[in-house]
Length: 250
Image (cartoon, rainbow, N blue to C red):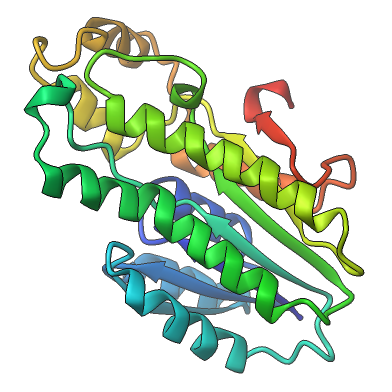
């Protein structure tokens, strides 16, 4: 049995990853604010175990009890592997830094940075004695490497995700049975986040015309294609703990 914990799993890239993993022998814990009935039907048809767990990742105190519940359902003595995909994320607030409220920035960083950090920490701590394959994949963005007008929270949060990935990977090099922790940017994917970008006021996000062109020219990958590509990286033996990658390099 292989166990997968996937955040933001009800739609977009997260749903694409879940769909790619629906096969016998896989047990998937889908973390999201809402269930996806179509994925549940697909899991039943594929002979895969899928359960949704409703959680608001901005509520940091909910993460530890949830991890305890999920690991309590795993039989690690018979498992082949255990995986965590930190995919959930938000884009707002959008606009110049001085227009953000404290509450908006705090919410953003709790979801995009603190939740992946705490999930990764809890995952590592609970799997220390497990000698099978252990993987944490943090979904990053090109915005981690490039500054965009109006995206101070998003760019900063994703850059921080990549750095904590590097540090966690460095630390895992000293572990007896290390977790492979890596970050990977999924490219430009046709998700609700992209739709929100195209509807943003031009004065709040100056690169809006470029993203509209991406959509009009068909440059956006589908969530299903992106999910399949990302799922394949979970067992790539060439990926080393601490790596920061871009799916377009594959």
